[in-house]
Length: 262
Ligand code: MG
Ligand code: MG
Image (cartoon, rainbow, N blue to C red; front, side, top):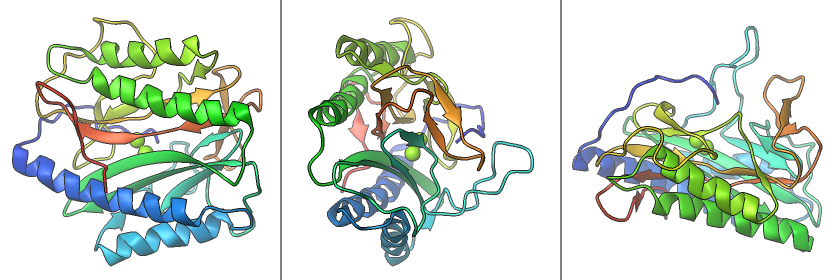
């Protein structure tokens, strides 16, 4: 989602602990969705499951009501974004959209808790999936962790970007250019932007207390995407499969502190 506050905000230890609580609610919602993903369930039902977890923890959905990036477009109406196969990001869940054996389902969720945002995403196999889809999920998730491994003081955002791009392309897939990782905090989108492609030693220097939502989006085919007529759903331009994994984390002088864990 595209509206950006355009500033880097360094968080205190106490603020990072609140972000961890927000992140934990998101992780619980995604875990509950994962548990319920099976052939025959609708993405609308999975949205209800996530929303129930947020409600139970006194958290509010970040995406619901999020303004459309396009003039005159409808605000986002749901708690999760729900995408299947060639659908990349920002899909609106629906009771008419039924998951089938062999699909891959990607789900993104944001929660506000005590004024702080957690933001995470994952892609889930529906029953048995193809070898190619399996590899896509593995490569995308591993790319996320390779990126996170570069997130430490002394490095720059470009070190994260380059690690993701290099690994994905070595594996024969491509990284999406139009949508990027981002700073996260009281707002879902803060600076810096962290693209999933780029060059080592470039970009913004990483500092302790920066909090970032990193989210590689990986396509089997071309990196190009297109926006559908509903103004939200983004699909791969060539209809190839795609996957999306995301964690929010805090930068430290050592290993990054992942905030969107159970
Ligand atoms: Mg997200
Ligand atoms: Mg995000």
